[in-house]
Every structure is written in C-alpha cells, then in structure tokens.
Image (cartoon, rainbow, N blue to C red; front, side):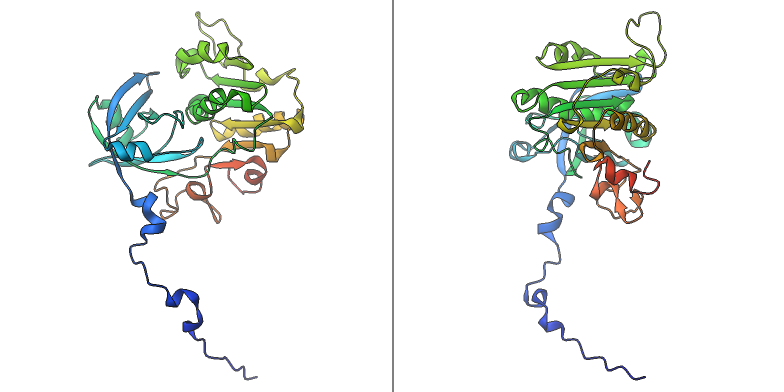
Length: 302
C-alpha cells in the first residue's frame, strides 16, 4: 500500500517569520542573571544550621529582586559550585535575602566557614510557590518538621504581615530533640500575634524540655477545624508527608487544599540536569510546591 506524504512547508509557521533570538534573553533572563551579593550577617541556629543574610550589591537590583513564599534560589560560591536553597525571609524585605543553610556538602561547608563580607552569586528565584492569595479568608495550618521550618518561614511571614487576610493560623513544628530547634528566638514573637497558635514538639526530650514529646501528628490530636475552610502547608522530610497529610485527611482537609514543598535532589534549577525528575515532572521547574493530590499521583515522589 502506497501512502502519499505531502511536502511540509516550514514557511507556513508563524515562528519562521519572527527574528530569531539566539541568546533567548527574554526567556532565560531570570535563569542566566547572577546577582552579586555579600554576607552581611550570620546567625548560628544549631550545630549544623546557620541563617545567612545576603545583600545584593547593586542597589537597583536589590530593589527589583522579589520572590513568593515557597520559591528558591541557586546560591553560588565561586570556585566551589552552587546549590539550591529555599528562601526563608519575608517577601517584603528588600534589604537582604535570608537563607537557612545546613552544612551538608562541599558548597555548604565552605559557606559555614565564610564570614561577613564574603561574596557569592545568586540566581533566581525559581520554582512554584504557595498560593497564599487563594488561601485568603481561610484557616491556615503551617506544619514543619526539622529543616522544613526554613521554607515554611516565608509563608509564616506572609500570613503574619497580612494578618487581616486570614482567619486562625496554627503553626506546628517538630524536631528530633531540643538541640535541633530552628528559629527558637522567634517563637515568643509568633505567639503574641492575635489568632496565631504555636505548638512545638520533640521526639526525644532532655532535662531542659518542658513541652510535649512525640511525633508531630500528636499536635493535631483533638484539633477542631472545618476541612473545607482550611488550607495546610507541610514542609519537612518526605517521610512525614504521608503521616501528616493522612491525619489532615481524617480531619476533613481535602488533598487539593494541602500543599507540600518537595525538594528532591534539585541541582540546576532549570530542568536541564534531570537529577530531580519524577517521570516527566521536574521538581525544580514544576515544583517545588505541589498540592498533595498531585504528589500522590507522582510515582516514587515520596
């Protein structure tokens, strides 16, 4: 059987008549742009984590840099490489970019050795964000485990700075032991805000700990919420997602109203290195923020 194939005329394509942009400046501006920055402050949080304040050197660039809660940047240490780091500060703070960094590899170890005045490069911001606008008028559950309080801190800033946009806010945080608690100097500040409830739990107590002991789901026992009027943001190790989100489901919160930050082996921020892919989904491009329904439909996502 002979099949006649008609010749395809590429000149019929609209793109053929457009001037080619070989540098792709319009689409890659936020990818290629490197903000030169310096460390202006370092706060020791634990033995493994420090909070860094990075000030973008150019005043105009510092003023135009913006991000949304849940996004991340690629942080470059010249001569050593770059790593993806979630932004931990307030979106309204134009003075500096706050990044909580755990000493875990070559690049982060070099950062922990750096002092004020050290120069770095920042690319981004990248990724999806928590839909804070969609959450207006609802109760908010902000749940973090371990280092997960770092990316959760940005939405905490957002809801506390825009307090009238949200109803009751519950912050729940858990770590393995008291020595690993992050940002403990801010707990009193959060507790003083009207309508904000903070609960902190550890898995193993020491002689100084007076709070609850157990898994973070223990903080949710007996909590009274209206599921269809509640949004939840969950950040932390993926192993906790199933337990926390299953508990939220039992409390009546639909999967599409639960959001998680899934930072899975991200390396380039552009979907080029393929290290963070889950099938056809790339965490750095399609995430890191996903609703829990989407996560449950991604094989081996958690």
